[in-house]
Amino acid sequence: MKFLKPISRSTLQFALTTTLALLGSLAMTQQAMAADAGKTRQAVQAELAQARADGTVARLAADTELAPPVKTFGGRSRAEVIAELVQARAEGMMASNNEADPFTTQNIAAARAENAARQEAKAGKPNR
Image (tube, rainbow, N blue to C red):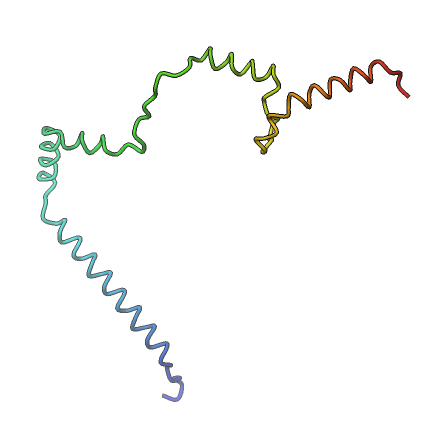
């Protein structure tokens, strides 16, 4: 007995807690298995046939949709939206790619007009 070390209190508590948790999970597994053991394969198949006959299975399957269907309302047509997009592009109201500030879209037309004026002025003057 000289080779055995004394076991600390925390080690004993850990071992006891682990053992109790394991026994509890085994008891729950036994209980779940005992509850399912009462039905035979034929009984389950008969229950399924009855559920299909009275529509219970169909109702359950209908309730498993991830999201309800979206209700759409009559708005603008595709042609109207495309025409609006073309007009916004022509007026310079479209933001550039990756442009995060929504307030800059109001100044895009002015900036483009200013840039065009600079280009025209530069085209009129000889290059240095």
